[in-house]
Amino acid sequence: MQLTGLHVYPVKSMYRLSPATARVEPWGLAGDRRWMLADSTGRFVTQRENPALGLIRTGLADDGTLTLTAPGGSRIEIPAPGTATGDPLAEVEVWGTRFRAAEAAEKAQGWIAEHLGDYRLVHLDDPRARPVDPKFSEPGDTVSMADGFPLLLATTASLDALNALIAEEHPEGHETLPMTRFRPNVVVGGAEPWAEDGWRRIRIGELTFKVVKPCGRCVITTTDQESGERRGPEPLRALARHHRLLRKASFGQNLIPERPAGARGDVLGTLRTGDEVEVLADGAHWPANELV
Image (cartoon, rainbow, N blue to C red; front, side, top):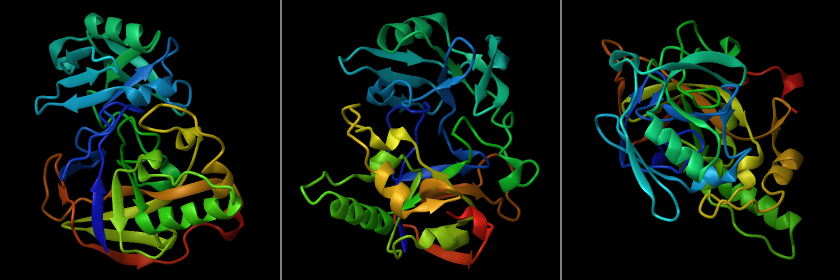
């Protein structure tokens, strides 16, 4: 098996970057979901509420400067705010966990209001501020502003199997779903369909990861990531009928990186497309009565 794709989402629910290499930090790929939009209560905003978020192209400079480009070509560069530069902090929330994030400059907020709505753009200055769900992690594990875990893995074989299931459900014809619908960080080729559901610990290139929880899917998977259009009930309908884990329609597995022996600092190592993927441990993990 090998790593066939890498994806970083600088702003939660906005368009992806697909580099050939990516540094891995304890809370995810470097630059992944360190920015997000929040509503007036501080709650996170995603394509669930506003599919247009996915149409905003993103860029990320080495110094942390974020570039946003709207479909009409309007473009803005936004320096990363933080406590060190005296930027204001806002209390925000992702799936019930509240933490503090730095607000972008007012010029950036005006751009967001013009193109997306009455939201605030915030940056996670301290990536240690948000713990991972303790039911699936160890003390000290943290995550960026991703939904719940540092990385999401998907396999091309499972996508092919899912598309085959959808084709059976729609003999009149249905579009073949691309991997972009599922917004993974790492894509693995060469596995058997659904094999990742049994993985518990894997190696990708020079790094090892705990495989901690299947990813329950939402309406974002029904949204074309190129056009921002909702495209009907698939793949949620097929997943709900054929692939439920932990009582949810599921696709992909959540990962937590492990710190290599002797590694210090925030960078644990680097992933490269083409890296070998090896399963180090597999077997039953979740209670049998929670699998369906």
